[in-house]
Amino acid sequence: GITRQTINLVNFLKMCEYQGLLRPQGTREEAGITKTKATSLFKKITGGGLGKVVSGQGVTLEQFLVLHKQLQKAMERTSSGSPAGKESHASSKESEELNRIEKMRERYRQSQENELRRVERHFSKVLDMRETQSQMQKVSHSKEQSRTKRLEERTFQIGNERIEHELKHVERLLEKEEERRKAEELLRKKQEDREREMQENLERKTKLREEQARLKAEAFKTKAELKDQANEQHGRKMLFMRQMMQAKQDKEDERAQAAVAEQLAANDERILLWTKDQMSKDHFNQVRVEYERSGEMKMPLGVTSLGVYDQLVNSERPTDLVDKNAEAKLLVRDSPIENSMKKGQYHWYKVCVEDALIIKFKADSLIGSVALFVGNGDCPRPTAQKHTWSKGGFEAITIFHLDRNYTLGYVYLAVQCVSPETRYRITCSYITDVENAEVVEETKKTQEDEALERAKLRIDSLLKNKLGARSADFIEKYNMLYSKDKLAVPPNP
Image 1: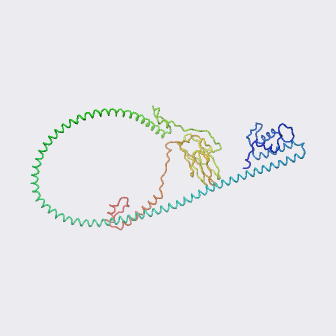
Image 2: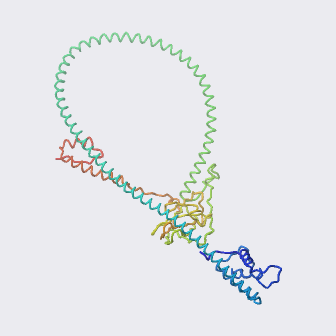
Image 3: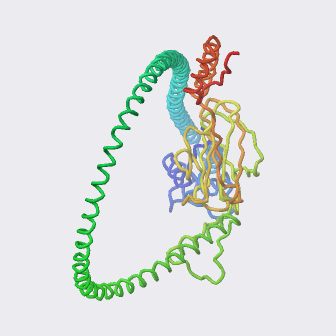
């Protein structure tokens, strides 16, 4: 880390001037070297060749030490005829400069140690949070197992109570049916006696009804004559009223016909507008079906515009086929790559797609854990601070073509180590066929369903055992009342 400290040409010249190594301009003193000589030495050390030295060009600390030694040699050559006192003075300045450089290196080393301690504290907090989350998941899993066990026992208890209640109910029904049979026999005897009495009374009343019928026939004949007269008068009245209503109806029909004509004209105009919108919608549906079938936006034959749907059909996805991160490794479709790294490091990968609808990156952590960050052409070196897509806590990222940041061409992936050390396997896959773009999620049976299934089997076994000791009439009655969704138990012979 220390060898990466740099110093540019301007600071180097100022340092030389401060230490008295440069000869003042416009003088012909023998002590020191000229600024041109110092610049030439700086360019020689930095590999600048004979070209022009840029003021912002820098050298490392090791190069500076080499440069300082060459300056001292140049100073010795220029001051070879000077007294020994001057050589002693240059040697003391060289020692002071070396001490200053050692202090600079010590301050830089101290700052690096402080930065490492800060990163260690940060990742210690992250690991503590992950440990807490793991403990919470274990507690939650234990609670879920206890809850499903209680649910199974409670369901079995409820089923047992229900079966006991149903058995008692069948017993009460059989007792009531026996009582009802005896009551029906007694009632039948009473009914036969009553029918004999009613037959005798009926014969007496028949003669009386015949006499009453004769009187009613005469009264009905009289009422019919009066009704015919009333109907004739009512017919004349209704004829007059129909004539009056017909005249009124004619006037109402004329007004209604005028209103209907206006309504028809408005309906024709509305239907014309609706027909245009419907045709645009039908054409757009044809375009959508063709796109789902072939993946291409094709207009129907003879149609040049889809109205308001043109902006959906004519939208284009940008394509960027320029590789902006040469250091990233190129991923091959459905070909995994294994790698390892230490905490805080990044590995970059890239994939070039030209017709993908869905792109999926998946990392399988063999040791430790990693985080994934994805960038498009505008973000060729994604990190945790700067990226286009990310999914915290998951080791898989799926990118759809309808995303507003989606671009064809190069897509870049960053894998960050979030544990002290990790080994992982990275895989890239993408879908180009529309028919395969649907994501199918398999439905898994939950623990509650399994507990309920076990409770149902236990209830069925319990019911079979309890009905096995009952009579055939009891079992037949029970099956008649509670045969739905119950275990079929054959009656005892």
